[in-house]
Length: 124
Image (tube, rainbow, N blue to C red; front, side, top):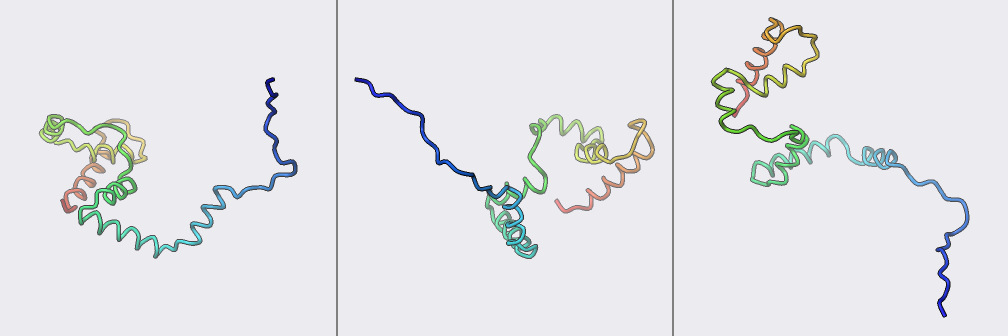
Protein backbone atom coordinates (compact mmCIF):
# COMPACT_ATOMS: atom_id res chain seq x y z
CA UNK A 1 0.00 0.00 0.00
CA UNK A 2 1.43 3.37 -1.06
CA UNK A 3 1.65 6.04 1.54
CA UNK A 4 0.46 9.49 0.80
CA UNK A 5 3.22 12.10 0.76
CA UNK A 6 2.39 15.27 2.54
CA UNK A 7 3.72 18.71 1.80
CA UNK A 8 6.41 19.86 4.20
CA UNK A 9 5.13 21.83 7.12
CA UNK A 10 6.57 25.16 8.04
CA UNK A 11 6.71 26.63 11.49
CA UNK A 12 3.73 28.83 12.06
CA UNK A 13 4.25 32.28 13.43
CA UNK A 14 5.54 35.67 12.44
CA UNK A 15 8.86 35.91 10.70
CA UNK A 16 11.40 38.23 12.26
CA UNK A 17 13.01 40.72 9.94
CA UNK A 18 16.52 39.84 8.80
CA UNK A 19 19.36 42.30 8.61
CA UNK A 20 19.68 43.74 5.15
CA UNK A 21 22.82 44.06 3.06
CA UNK A 22 22.84 47.73 4.06
CA UNK A 23 23.17 46.69 7.71
CA UNK A 24 26.08 44.40 6.82
CA UNK A 25 27.79 47.18 4.86
CA UNK A 26 27.31 49.58 7.77
CA UNK A 27 28.92 47.06 10.13
CA UNK A 28 31.83 46.61 7.72
CA UNK A 29 32.38 50.35 7.41
CA UNK A 30 32.28 50.72 11.21
CA UNK A 31 34.80 47.92 11.68
CA UNK A 32 37.37 48.86 9.05
CA UNK A 33 38.96 52.25 9.53
CA UNK A 34 40.48 54.21 6.67
CA UNK A 35 43.92 53.52 8.17
CA UNK A 36 43.14 49.77 8.28
CA UNK A 37 42.11 49.87 4.61
CA UNK A 38 45.23 51.85 3.70
CA UNK A 39 47.32 49.12 5.39
CA UNK A 40 45.51 46.44 3.38
CA UNK A 41 46.10 48.26 0.12
CA UNK A 42 49.75 48.92 0.99
CA UNK A 43 50.19 45.22 1.77
CA UNK A 44 48.60 44.28 -1.55
CA UNK A 45 50.92 46.66 -3.43
CA UNK A 46 53.94 45.15 -1.67
CA UNK A 47 52.76 41.60 -2.41
CA UNK A 48 52.07 42.51 -6.06
CA UNK A 49 55.57 43.95 -6.44
CA UNK A 50 56.98 40.74 -4.99
CA UNK A 51 55.20 38.71 -7.66
CA UNK A 52 51.87 37.77 -6.07
CA UNK A 53 49.56 37.41 -9.06
CA UNK A 54 46.39 37.49 -6.93
CA UNK A 55 47.45 40.79 -5.38
CA UNK A 56 48.18 42.20 -8.85
CA UNK A 57 44.78 41.04 -10.13
CA UNK A 58 42.97 42.48 -7.10
CA UNK A 59 44.74 45.84 -7.42
CA UNK A 60 44.18 45.98 -11.18
CA UNK A 61 40.47 45.33 -10.72
CA UNK A 62 40.14 48.32 -8.43
CA UNK A 63 42.63 50.65 -10.09
CA UNK A 64 41.87 49.96 -13.75
CA UNK A 65 38.59 48.06 -13.64
CA UNK A 66 37.83 44.84 -15.42
CA UNK A 67 38.63 44.93 -19.12
CA UNK A 68 35.55 45.29 -21.28
CA UNK A 69 37.22 44.05 -24.44
CA UNK A 70 40.15 42.02 -25.67
CA UNK A 71 43.65 43.43 -25.89
CA UNK A 72 44.55 44.96 -29.23
CA UNK A 73 46.73 42.98 -31.57
CA UNK A 74 50.39 44.02 -31.74
CA UNK A 75 49.99 45.27 -35.31
CA UNK A 76 47.13 47.56 -34.23
CA UNK A 77 49.33 48.98 -31.47
CA UNK A 78 52.16 49.64 -33.94
CA UNK A 79 49.78 51.31 -36.41
CA UNK A 80 48.35 53.53 -33.66
CA UNK A 81 51.85 54.52 -32.56
CA UNK A 82 52.88 55.34 -36.13
CA UNK A 83 49.78 57.50 -36.50
CA UNK A 84 50.58 59.25 -33.21
CA UNK A 85 47.49 57.84 -31.52
CA UNK A 86 47.27 56.62 -27.96
CA UNK A 87 44.24 54.54 -27.04
CA UNK A 88 44.44 55.53 -23.36
CA UNK A 89 44.55 59.21 -24.26
CA UNK A 90 41.70 58.76 -26.72
CA UNK A 91 39.54 57.07 -24.06
CA UNK A 92 40.42 59.66 -21.42
CA UNK A 93 39.64 62.61 -23.66
CA UNK A 94 36.43 61.06 -24.92
CA UNK A 95 35.26 60.55 -21.34
CA UNK A 96 35.77 64.22 -20.47
CA UNK A 97 32.35 65.81 -20.18
CA UNK A 98 32.77 68.63 -22.68
CA UNK A 99 30.39 69.07 -25.55
CA UNK A 100 32.80 68.90 -28.46
CA UNK A 101 31.56 69.54 -31.96
CA UNK A 102 34.35 67.89 -33.91
CA UNK A 103 37.29 65.49 -33.25
CA UNK A 104 39.69 68.21 -34.41
CA UNK A 105 38.15 70.79 -32.08
CA UNK A 106 40.99 72.92 -30.60
CA UNK A 107 39.64 72.33 -27.10
CA UNK A 108 39.80 68.54 -27.51
CA UNK A 109 43.28 68.80 -29.02
CA UNK A 110 44.41 70.89 -26.04
CA UNK A 111 42.93 68.43 -23.57
CA UNK A 112 44.54 65.51 -25.38
CA UNK A 113 47.95 67.26 -25.31
CA UNK A 114 47.71 67.91 -21.57
CA UNK A 115 46.82 64.29 -20.90
CA UNK A 116 49.61 63.03 -23.18
CA UNK A 117 52.12 65.27 -21.39
CA UNK A 118 50.98 63.98 -18.00
CA UNK A 119 51.12 60.36 -19.18
CA UNK A 120 54.61 60.90 -20.59
CA UNK A 121 55.81 61.97 -17.14
CA UNK A 122 54.56 58.77 -15.47
CA UNK A 123 57.18 56.12 -14.72
CA UNK A 124 57.05 53.03 -16.92
